[in-house]
Length: 436
Length: 153
Image 1 (spheres, rainbow over the protein chains, first blue to last red):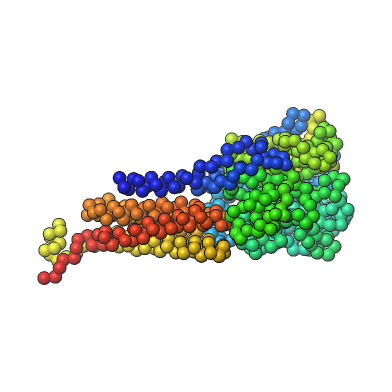
Image 2: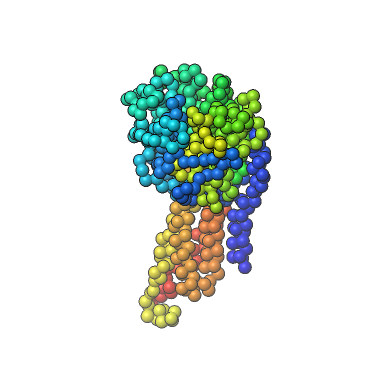
C-alpha cells in the first residue's frame, strides 16, 4: 500500500509539469501584437519532427487558383537558396551543414538523432552553386553548370556590379563574375564570419545596400537561449554591416536569434529580415517574426523576447539591456522557421502582390501540431505589412510527412516566384496560370 | 536448507546480489554528486556545472536501471528478500529515487537557469533523500549471503 502511494506521488509530480498547454489559436500571433501565452515546459519537450518522404514524380506543392507551379530543377542536393541574375540565369545554392556540434550534454545526441529525421537524404555533392540557364524564360532551363564548387555551407549570395559575393558559413567570399558567363574568377576573402566548433545556426544570409556600398550579413546564434555560454555568442545573433572593399564590419543590429532573408524594401533604405525565435518555451511561444531592422537596435535575444518579455532561462539577466529591447514589426506565429524573404518586385502577379512579402517557412519541429512548411504572402501598404499572412505555396507537408521544405525565395526576371526546397531537392517556380 | 547449511558450515553466495552491490552505489554516488553540482551551478550560474549535473544524472540512471533489474531478479528469485520488510523498503526507496531522477533528467534538459532553479534542484534534493534512504536500508537486505555464515564451534 505504502509502495503504491509512493509511486503515485512520483507520477503525480511527473505529470504536474504538463498542465499548461498554451491552448491558443495560432492566428492570434499574426501581426504586430501577437498573443503571448505564459511560457510552458512539459517534462518531455513536445516535439513532432515530420519524416521526410520527398516528392514522387509529377507531384508538386499547391498554389492558389490563378497560379501554377512547376519544378525548375529536380534531383538537386539540398538546394537552400536561389538567386536570379538580371539576364534570367538562376543561381541555386546547394548547402548542407557538415560539421557536427560538440556533445557537451546528454541532450545533444538525443536531439540530433530526432532532428536527423527532418533532413532528407541527398546523395549528390552539395555545398556548391549551380547556374541554370533558361534563355526563353519558360521555366525549363536548357543548361545547368556548376558555377562555384567546394564551398563551405554557403547560403547568402549577392551580385554587386562585376562581383559575386557568397556568404559561406565561415566567411564572405568575393568572386569576379560577369553576368552572362558561366565561370567565376578566383575567390578572395572579404571577411571571416563566426563559425567555429559549435556553429549551431550556420546559414549566413547576405544582401547589399541599394547603392552597393555595404554588405549586410545575418549571423545566427550558437544556441537556443545562450545555453552554450556568452563566449560562444560573440558577435552572433546579429546582423553585420560589412564594407565589401576592406572587410571591416560592425554589428548593425543585435538580439536577433537567427536572422535570415535579409533584403531591402524596394525603393527604400530599409533593411528587412525574418527571424527564428527561441524554442522550448511551449508550442505557442515565441512567435517567429518579420521585421524592419533599425541601426543599432537590440531585439531581445537571449535576455528577452518580443520586447521586454524576460526569458528566465538566461542567467545572469541584464535588466538594463532588456529595457532597450525593441519589439519586432510582425509576428508569423510560433516555430514556423522563416528562412527566406523576398518582396514582390515583378509585374506578372496581380496588383495586390506588388511590394508584398513572400516568406519561406521551413516548418516546425518544436510543437505537436506542425506549423509552417509553406510559403506565405503578406501584403504591404506604404512599406508596412498589413493583414494576416495568406498561404501561397502549400502542401509541402502531407499526412504529417514532409515531401519538401521551403527555404529561400526569390522573384525572377519574368516576375515568377522561385522557391528553394531543400529536403525535396527541388527548385519550384510559380507563375500566373494564364501563362508567362 | 538453513539447518543443513548451519550444520555443514558451508556458505552460499548469491550471484546477482554482489552485482547489485556493485551497480547500486554508482547510481547513488552520481545522484549525490548531481545535487552538489546543482548547488554549485545555482551559486555560480556557470553552465559547466549544469552539464556536470546532466551527465551525472544520466550516468546514475544508467547504472540505476541496471541495478533495478538485478534487484527485481533478486526479489523474484529469493523468498528470503521478499519476506523481509527491509527488502521492500529498500526496493520502494530505490525505485522512487530512480523515478524522481528520471523526471530530474528531463527537467535538466532545459536550456539554462530554470533547469536547476528551482525545480531541478528540488528534484535533486528529493532524489538524494530517497537515495540515502535506499542506502540506509540496503545493509539490512540479505543480498550477498544466501544464508548466514555459520558460527565456528
